[in-house]
Image (tube, rainbow, N blue to C red; front, top):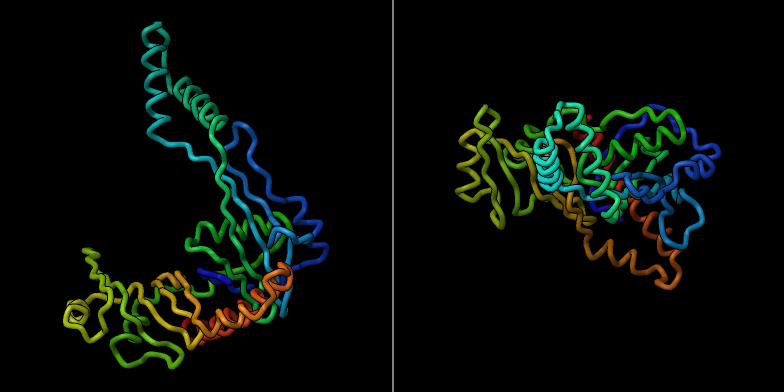
Length: 291
């Protein structure tokens, strides 16, 4: 079940012919001794024997990224030590030499640093014609799309929500324009649209609280708000159109709980089917409100 949602509209159906062979060519591997990071496709769950899990006309992909932590402060410290030592030996230190020293230092640190794995799941929904990434930043979502392009060729997408939606969310919360699918919860953030960018955050306060009303009357707009979507999940919607920190209701959790725990494939299939249904319904809501 996804915890974050970044939506991309797919302009033309993706070519999934020979998809397993294509993804195999870009499967996840740990970085080499001196490499800093790698990214590749991974199986969706440990016992799976395919890279793509398809259910309800949606296709799930899993990416595993390995990255080594190379602290900039450590690199700069060692670089300064190398330069001092070279200067003491009357060695000329030009720009080219500094870059060479820095590369050698980074390679040395990388060779003694274990890579940290991170998994990202995304879904291509043929019915809704969207790709949905389960991550909280556009940079990670774009990395998923870039890898998919390398594997299958054309992936013609644009962000589903193309504009800043602060004004729209502000109308929802303060102008009695809240869609019937949503319930405003007690956490949010407002920001002034002028050059000051001053912010006001609130937690465990309703929209009619004096502090919240004062922030709005000062001209601030909603840039993130905590909502409930129908009886499916709570979430935070940002002015960039990102859906973050999803928590499913007991109703949804009970649906997943009905799947047998001792069969990993059936459990994943159940989760994927419920996830597809839920995300697809939410996607239609976003399309209606913002496109």
